Length: 469
Image (cartoon, rainbow, N blue to C red; front, side):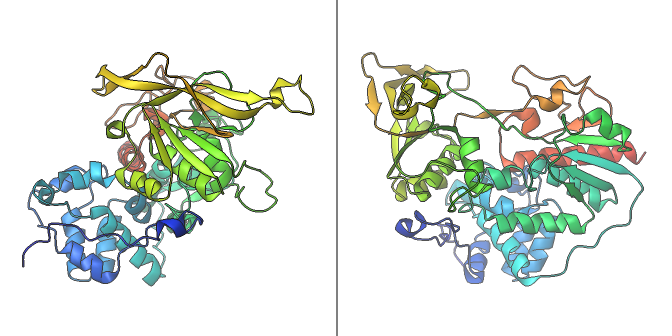
């Protein structure tokens, strides 16, 4: 049978409908579509796709199970390497990783590995009610700081080996960036809850509302009998542009905006944590978080949403699929533009009170691309005399995040980089403090879910090797 050169399309909600709701945009493969897509796999003996996967899933093997319609077998195969298959199938940038290495992709479109992973995980969740069995305890206790993808992965890998694992989470809901950062229309929170329930069934204990560095310190955790600590506290400290007007009301970091919407449900009537809705919104930045913020603003009732990015579409770092979805939904991209000031007006009831100022527009300057920078991207250069004012009343800054210094500032012996990341041994996740490991965004700064999971697996293996001697 000849190989279809094109992958099977993912069914989605129509743009004009989905732009007004928070239901998941992509609807998932049917069994028929999954089998058709699986049959495009060449089952390469050298499996270059596996080398492109940060957690080394045996991709040809799980796809071969799909070909045979053994969907549970496919799920069990993925689960050997990944603790969060339903999550990764939705948000992992497969086009830059496993699919980028796909042999079929040399001549045709690569196999839709991510869509197949999602299908398998969803099939399992819909058709299997049996919880995983809790292993017998090996008598060792380990603590994980943070319940994002890196912490959950480390905890899951250790729990499967019989470790008694407790996760401490600062927020009131477990999941980290999976619940506060990624919108419902991309990653339903019921999916995250299901994955977390599976880890709890393995014996993982999760304590919420515990801020490590404030409620408890790392020193105190070690005094409580934990034999190792894995820090996976993420990178929740937002970066700003440091331009005039960033303190005006109506200016948000993308982190705050998405957290208020995703976790605090500020879009509901009479929310305890309100959010500005409607009007004209500018999102500054070009990554996946910027796309999430822009598409969330649209669903909250914005009259118009702009994505303002200082380079061209070719340099835009967001996933291609997310950009395409944003354009289909009516979001306008103001490329080769850079904000230089956020304009505002004072509270008319108190003209002297500048702290109560509100956004009235954003002054931008046009850019052109010059010589490449140190990362090979052409450097944006201002075009003299090209300033203009964009008519907006809400501005969302999405230019990256950094690790929060709370843990490192309260823990002796932890070496950090100039950007605040914890210094670790790449092969083990060991920090400069004995018995303390770290990984994910707390080390690298903001990165992908799957790379954070890879760091969690690395640390779990190293902790096990240390404690099982």
